[in-house]
Length: 284
Ligand code: AMP
Ligand code: ZN
Ligand code: FE
Ligand code: FE
Image 1: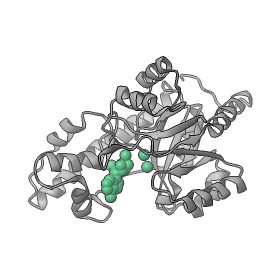
Image 2: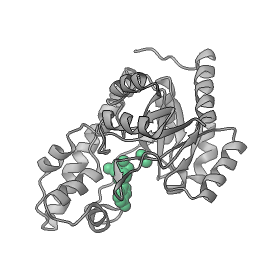
Image 3: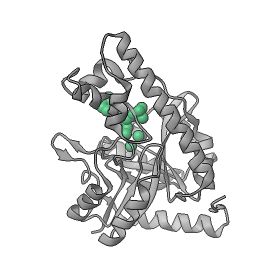
């Protein structure tokens, strides 16, 4: 049976794997399709396209946007986005600046708590335009200021902890439009991790294309519940590991094996958007 992992992070955001490592794991694990979904970045997609092509793996370029609706955070995956779409690139560049400023603010708060971390240490470790809290956590570990990332999140970085800084977010409705105008499909990521059920009808009205029913942190019951919701709203079904690298000594990629029929439906939906002329898909 053919299967896919449509939620992967690389070192172009807060994943620890390079494109070569991700594609290598994809081959080793026998994946027929992969999607890269770095936070606020499509930078790693070009290399991933080449590597997957050479390996005979179908590749879907993507990104994960942090959005909000009625003050509730929701992550939206954009699949098949045009990597050169000007508006998408402009907006992503803004999100990246927000992320970089937020790192400085988190470090300032840590310093107020007498934790002597330097912003430069975080940027050097992150070595990407889209730094996030995991980079702060890893920099704290590297500097010997905490024992591990879990401790960093628990003590400082989790929501409402002293060094947590809220992030300015795009509205979910605007994010869906941003993905669509870039020729992509907009999917609600890991609904089981956020309090996003109530917003599904509003997002569907705004053109939401699908839900990530299968995710490492969804129980079987949770996945089944979202499969029912997808069915009810005629939404596409996706799934992925949300791999950020190693987890408990093993690469997280491989944990979710999305049946390939869902990938075929994604391609069909993309094609149908194109033929309906709903996407400009120009490098405007
Ligand atoms: P950010 O986009 O900077 O807010 O960081 C979000 C990322 O941090 C998520 O994609 C996860 O990879 C990671 N993360 C969030 N909460 C935790 C947590 N409690 N423990 C470890 N990692 C977390
Ligand atoms: Zn992440
Ligand atoms: Fe997410
Ligand atoms: Fe993710």
